[in-house]
Amino acid sequence: MPNSTPHLVAIFAYDGLCTFEFGCAVEVFCQSRPEMGEDWYRSVIAASPSEPVRGLGGVRVQADGGLELLEAASTIVVPGWRGPFEPVPQDVADALCKAHARGCRLVGICGGAFVLAATGLLDGKRATTHWHHVKKLADAYPRITVEPDVLYVDEDLLLTSAGSAAGLDLCLHVVRKDFGAKAANRVARRLVIPTHREGGQTQFIERPIAARAGTRIGVLLDAIRSRLAEPWPIERMAAEAGMSVRGIHRHMRDATGLAPGIWIITERIARARELLEETNLSVEMIAQQVGFGAATTLRNHFRGMVGLSPSSYRLQFEAVE
Image (cartoon, rainbow, N blue to C red):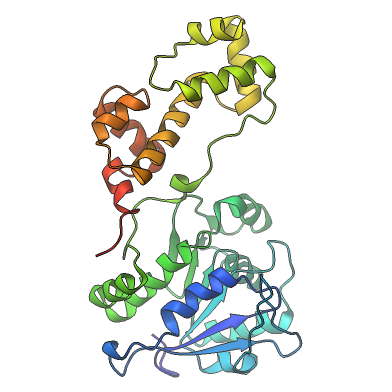
């Protein structure tokens, strides 16, 4: 940690504030936690004096001061941003660069990665952001190595997180670095969240949408989704849709962007995720209900697509004791 003011966290607020990401930082760093001792974080809210601070949902934020508050901070958190291509004011970029030059840690939650990217500090380093915007970040800043499938990236004094709730993962990671695993576990327990989630962003990306499905293909996709437990070889799909096998391949790719077999596996994994989140069914029973037949087959495909086992995935949706 920098030696300017021990454990002083400055949360940067701005007009158009992303209130969820802001709330993540406030909940972790601004809450009074006497059980953590006298060395626990102190926090301030800093904002540019040239604009009001209004957040999503009509929230108004009263900052503790202007950008001068960043000068004493050990950690600066940028909770989201107004948009991937919204310009970053020069005085903000300069303040962040100055802070980083003296050894201050910069934390960008979700769209906050775009703010750090605009300063140039992430050039030659790894970073991440919400899965919906990773390509935009990579295209706009080719000198950054964008990691599309992680919850957060730690580049020592430059840290970035994936979308929204992954900001909590990153904030807990900061606590773990500063105070150890026991402290991070205590904060996570208060928040009723896992202290450390396995896997990456792919587990939260929506299933492919049949955006251009014609009537016959659309009916076929609905039929498969409603009867995932049944076998669906390509010949059966072709017969159900009244098409040739070659035609099924072409129309399925047009409609979903995936080959028929891959699309079915994706749908089965998506349904398995729902059952893991919402029911207490065994992995074996879920495998049968979604059409994989055996738990081993489900586990292999699930780990390949989601990045962790079905049991580990389920644990993320159980309450922390």
